[in-house]
Image 1 (cartoon, rainbow, N blue to C red):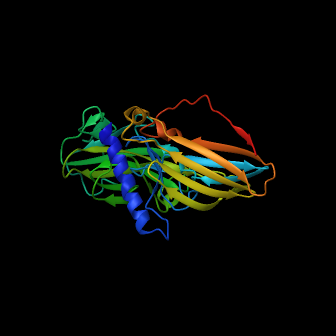
Image 2: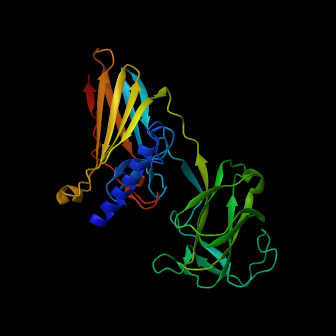
Image 3: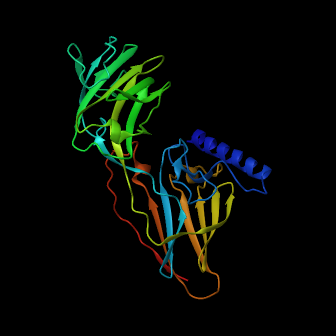
Length: 330
């Protein structure tokens, strides 16, 4: 536990040094919000707190959003909604599926819809060699995979390849290469497919993948998703961010929300001399609203946390309850 906390504090010390050397700009690479330990660690990655979703230090979206209602006008002071996707062709975390595969180099037209798959094996995804993390074992250097599927509507827009791979991979949709990269990832990534409505066909389609292992582990899982167009929050204004101050255990924001000044403080009390306090998996968020002209104001704060904070992957099921709503009068 002390090791984790020291790591968190060392990151904060680095930020303090950066801020001290750039006191006129008051900018940092990222701003700590929740920094209790490496697993419970959320940051604002833009200078304007409303310009992007908040993220885990690994870069994964872990969204916190904040809104304040002042005399029937709503202002956003923190975060931005993350992208949401509708499953078109499920990856294994969405639904079990099987594909045709071979570990011997196939004929040149293996990516095409009409290719003869005789001699290929059938296996369930994901493929890999790490115990407990695959349904079909893959231990050779090369793997070729074909997945046929049917589309009723080929005019989908904003289609993404959902892919988790280790390591070098080339992906083809109906014979057209849509992705090629060297290296590996340890989570699902979403790659936009250019001209998807032209490449996809009404009826039979095929996703074909060649993946090559060069070192370390092996893994392959994939699907197709469509970005869901969220309806913009109507009549919501962005709060004016006046200042952000990073201290040893706190990040403090100052906003103007119409006739009210709002101070939001994120505190993670990692005090090395108080082991009991450090051992609590708790960070604190406090809100202070002050009327600018001294008149009484009706102020309501809505602070949302994404279910992604509680899971390893977004597809895992989450149940939420005991939501509190606080109304303050100023």
